[in-house]
Length: 458
Image 1 (spheres, rainbow, N blue to C red):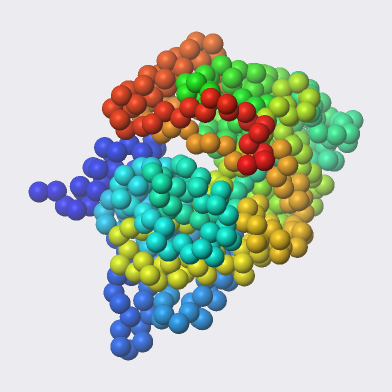
Image 2: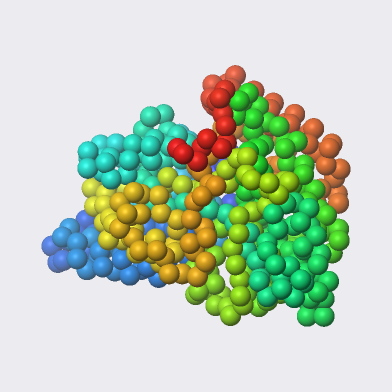
């Protein structure tokens, strides 16, 4: 007979929610023992994959542990690698943490189907509805599913072009690129001007293609009002990727891309940028905090909206990522009441106002925005939403073969012709959606009057 752990791992592989290999974790005490008469505190496990807010979170959790009236102690664990795999393994093994970060690659609909997360509707008071606003509590596929609420909003991440002003000046450039053609040309000029110092015009963290394109191709495409999914018809159309992917390929082909980009992760990239070796790259609103504490730098760097296809005003909206959710409570927690007590504390303005002021994330909650001072962190104000919006969520379903990000990576590396790859992706993704719809496992998302630009006001 299989052990409980063996069955859990087998189930993990069968569900195939994550393409990467499974990582296991050692069994842990999930804090299921109640506080004893001797005064031992009730333990709540809190797992997160967020590193950028660790200093503030440690401070606030310490405050909660010292002041709460329920004799509760939150044990805070930051996982820098394999968060999703470890969390899913723990869920399937019945060892899930009481509280978990919702900002991950584990889709809310999959977690709901696994009965892994607790609905919050019964906890929500009229005061909380007023504080968060009805719209932020009804983000389907983000914090709600099938009409039930599972998480509350805190912050989102916006995406921008990050650039070295000194390297721009050395190359004779006075402003960031506004078009795709300028992006290619500027990268080449910076590379040529900095050749003696080992400087390159552009960098991409393509060790993880999903993260790389989430920070670069997707923001540019969506700012132009395009997407890989046609929201009006409910069908995939990967031809929209073509000009943006070809732009990255041109930068590679003219040797303006930082060497080793194929296996480059985001932190080594940031380290090279902080050292003055990269002219520009694209990333999210965590960067000001990164260059303030993780990779302190003296370079003169700036932030700009990503280029549009033709350099003209945006026809769409860059997207606010991971917006509308933050934390989940485990459905199997034996201390949901205490977990909610902690949630109320950590979601309070006393926590979230400094969270925004310190540049940990772009605030979405009206009460936080109204009270907070302008963040003092260098360049953080340039990440404030302007031509940015919360986009709808793609339908989640099985697709045979490689993910589109891996296919695009193979084109950039010169392995595949792009047109053939686009045709293949359209076929596979649409067939996968058709099958899932027929099986009744997925509802096709169709928004007949979809207009990306109009999302900004919502």
